[in-house]
Length: 457
Ligand SMILES: *Cc1c(COP(=O)(O)O)cnc(C)c1O
Image 1: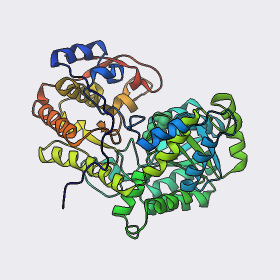
Image 2: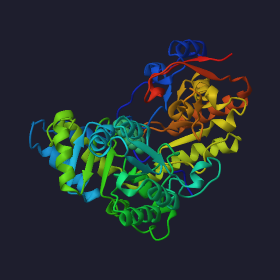
Image 3: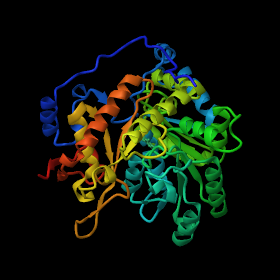
Image 4: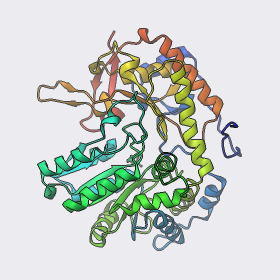
């Protein structure tokens, strides 16, 4: 088999900024050991997120120029609406400026005290919007999804038996929605099978609870279904995506992921009454229903991006990029999530740094070490992001302590990834020298974005 190549050539380039190790130690100190507080021009390879960091195509840039900025009824909106409808088949398409704006709208309406939202795993902004409304979020990922080092084809699946049990316990009338996140971002970018989506759908139907899809990475999930699930090998990505959405009552989406856009999102719905309520809130918080929180040019970029993301040459290269880095690290003995996810590679910080307890944030310590060693920026997905406190102010740690290396779409080449592997392997060889961290200052919600930390030693 020949090398799987980047399915594009480069027309415009951006220089990246080199720093010395000494400079990076100082930069990190000044950023209070929080990589969100580091200026991006001090980062060499930025794997903080795949959100909004995609390289747009020449077609998308041409679309940007064609964007129609009319306040109401812009043709750019109708192109956007058509693109979203042709995938989701949902009649009511509501544009928002990001995924979380769609979440804010839906959970303001359906959430509130005493309500419960069940998911395979809620993404951090989704959980925050649920909790901000006064409601509770519950994650019920399958057992395989809790063991980062053991491979399985669909580790993003929901535990359907637990879903049923939880609904019985809480009572369906207190559960306004069940949300299936595809792929499961916080659970390692692991896919959800069509079979699982169908089973969740059946349970929801039996209890008369609507099911939504958090669709940020629908194309990556569809590609995994095509590769791994019986009966889908000969179906197109569009057909698989359409089937996924056919089981849902609605979806939220961040166009900053699988739509290759730098900003944008949407809410798509079947229920007209709910759509009307959402639009009323949209007008107050985002904008008129034919632009939401976006410019006409953003709507064009998203419409084109949604088409481009379903190209199988692209998805093949995309998924292979994660496998390639995962293989390199595995061969060097680095504990890395198996199998590779769709948009990121996840290091298992608990196994990487067994000498650092959860209360000293091993994931954050590892992310800091990667920055110092090679200027690589990653993100902790562990107790800093998801840790809670009990009534005695003691940390309730997250289930997993992961470090995510999210790969921006169409941005870095194979040699960039080779360099990242070298940095990680070097840190792994010197792992005993890494020490833990403590939090000095934090916000009540989404604390990882702004928290200030200090070294323990
Ligand atoms: C990014 C993301 C969101 C939120 O989208 P934003 O555009 O960042 O507001 C929600 N869910 C998942 C799974 C995501 O990855």
